Image (cartoon, rainbow, N blue to C red; front, side, top):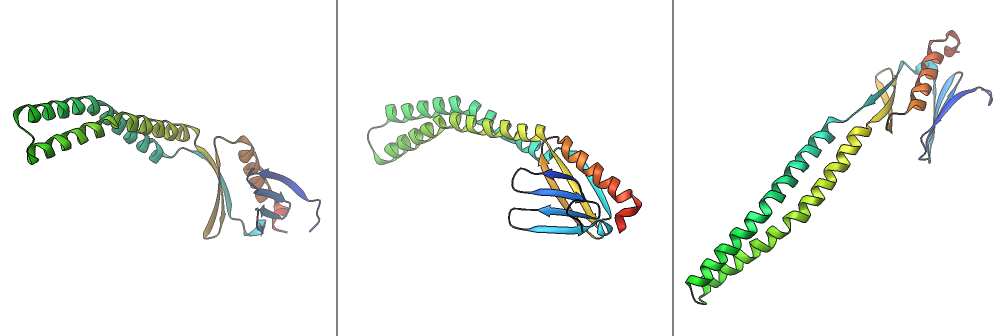
Length: 176
């Protein structure tokens, strides 16, 4: 193999690189290198995909955030009212003291619902952003096995690399 028969390459940016030569495909990683003859490559596929699980999780987190945010105020008020009723109707007996402590603890816990709701909403926003960005995935089929190379976002360079591989596969000299 001549060192000058490089057709095109795609850099993943994280230490990985795919290189297409006239008769082989090479994957250069940070710790390894793999070379596959084009004659062993059955097909190449490239697709832009969005993961619907991210959207479902984002919706679930937003609903949980709304529920916690909506429940925080009424729960705090209800616990304060119950605590005031128990303390007004009784002295300092052990059962009443335990009830007052429990109601106060639940009221203080309800105050944490709003910050937790904001954290959940932030997580949902991040998931929505990752859903919207999607990913471009290049898949090579080798008989019964497949290798996939995903890249975040809509990546035109990966599509062009896949087109070059497909053209090389279709050319009659790729089997040599």
